[in-house]
Image 1 (spheres, one colour):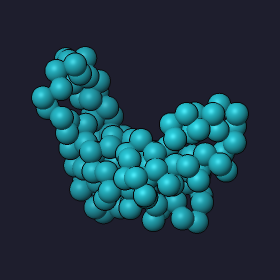
Image 2: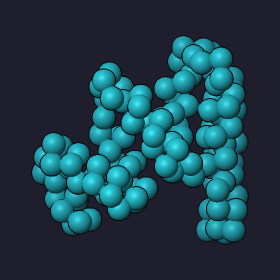
Image 3: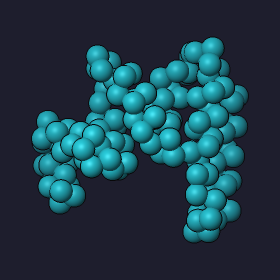
Image 4: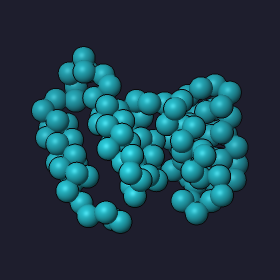
Length: 121
């Protein structure tokens, strides 16, 4: 299935890739397919909000999905809660020593940006 998804992606067959991604997410419960599905959507798509919110529930440790959910709710009064979920996703696997100090520095810079950016960005 990974090979087929790669081929669809490489040949710009987005409709077929979307089907594979949705199957991988919904049926096989694989995070990378949910991430690909969400990244393949436009924020103006009718189902975008519901799909991002569902993916955020299904994969709370996905930085990509939690970032999309944070952006979706950037104007919400509950923005700190979405920011908290994004933060938690950043360090879901604290035992993974391969991330190293550079990962922490990048994360802190990203968090500072998110906290200090003006509303509406």
